[in-house]
Image (cartoon, rainbow, N blue to C red; front, side, top):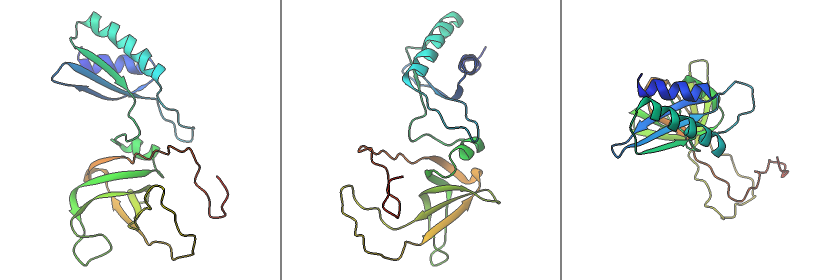
Length: 191
């Protein structure tokens, strides 16, 4: 039995999805797991106990199967997880993502997108034609910087449609709020 099949059988048997298997030249075997996703159900995330449970079972099974490795690492996809397939895009529609296209888009002077641009950060949206990313090129304030409350014209939003086969890489944008504060709505109330 191949390593991929053995690991996938163990991981799915324990109720998780196998995201990735990576074997390094130094003998490290990295296994990335996630909890199954269902549309409309509140998302759950992999925790340390989940990784520990999978690690124990994999250590036993890999020893029995005679598969050599020096170190086993089992982890979650993380806050900047790769989006690999249609299901990942469905799951994270509406989230802030970073995408890199295989080929640059835009021509100088044509449309809103700068010439030869390949990288974008914005909100992932589903459209009738496929997928699009919506963003604003207005710079974000620096952490701790006071933002003027004076009314000003909102920044112009831009959108770029794309097909999954046009992407070199797509991943969730790693947004971390160390202060634990909720963003305020326009009315000044906490959400």
